[in-house]
Length: 219
Image (cartoon, rainbow, N blue to C red):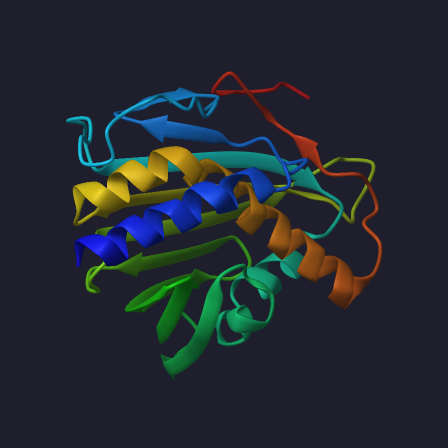
């Protein structure tokens, strides 16, 4: 068990520098204080984890060149997450109604795969909320997408608010999240906009970050 965790940790440390810094600039939130998160490597013993909360939160707000309906359709398409969401290996919708769906998902980071059941609330075309209360990796996981009007002079645009909040079961995974999770969340944001581009063509306007130091930028 210890050897597997060591190899897992080393693999992630090697993996982190390879991340492409996304043009999206969301904010990593911990203990309610929202601030831009910069990863600082510190020399610590591998077995000496800092005593900190396992709760993590990330929020982002972007102006994108697609309509509310287009972005909602992409984010609510849980059945096809495995085709375009980073690290999603499987996405099977078990039940679905106009307002709710239930899906089994598997997320994978070598050398492990973790499965969980997601309960998704749908408010077309304004909101997609996914909650997980089972699984071995998290005590809870909440993902929230909100879609609102964009530029007045550009119909094909909208504002996308993205938030993910979770609590790891283990201190080990919590420590790893400090190293890489903000970058993973940014890549997730970008993946959905890229998928919109594949489905609906070029964006009408370049994506624009609407958060600055944890506050919304006035347009």
